[in-house]
Image (tube, rainbow, N blue to C red; front, side):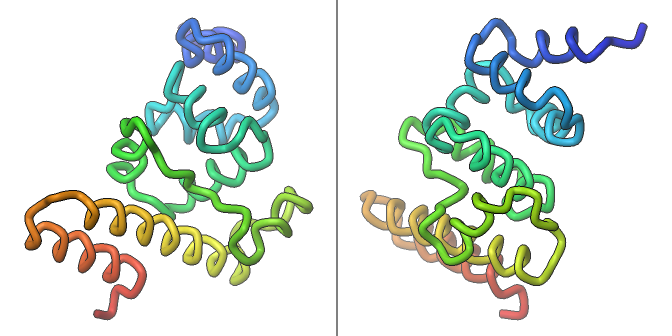
Length: 158
């Protein structure tokens, strides 16, 4: 039996009122809801993404979901970051073009400007992640591997 939109939203909210509110605001954007569902970003995880990583800003959330949709971050990176107690925002509006994208939320997401924006966001995220992991008292070999992986993800020709 096919679920209606209301049932889908209720299921994805998983009893979390913030997630329910966010999903209700995305009622006309099935694609974004599908992206969230495919990444298992539901319930309290969606609440965390919205409140902690997007500062309870719907436009930031929509841009973040669009970055997820176009593959800026891998599923593993998304899941690992959302599982962290001190997760890093995927979208940093202080990076060049960030304010522009919030001001014009309907800007086409598959352009050279968008691709460069996503590259900058990913590089910033990976820099923060690598700095944090190098501050840990972890194995130096593991730190080098993480840094190499971050560099290769930015420049696949290395």
